Image (tube, rainbow, N blue to C red; front, side, top):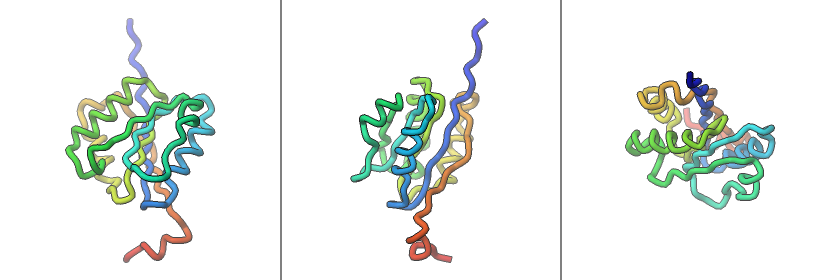
Length: 139
């Protein structure tokens, strides 16, 4: 009898541009403790994941270049996540752009029939630059 694999844990990492999302991902990968990570990156810029760090952490990285994760065709996001899931990581980290709406991304993932039983949505991490937050915050 074939055992059904456990769902892959998925964490969304969100925050404004320059808040430290990539820095947090680098920290996680360097302290993963043997956990194999898949990373879906939706931000292209000067701060990227160090290829040597990715190799040493045995991480799989997939760049989502079709635009913002929350604004594009939801099927593209689901397809990208399924592509990463086929590589059998223990966890997938999704780094959104600084302008993405986390709720829309999570809704897409939670409602995708093809991801049922494949992934387990874990807590979302929102990175905030405490020094600059109030200059950006609008009530």
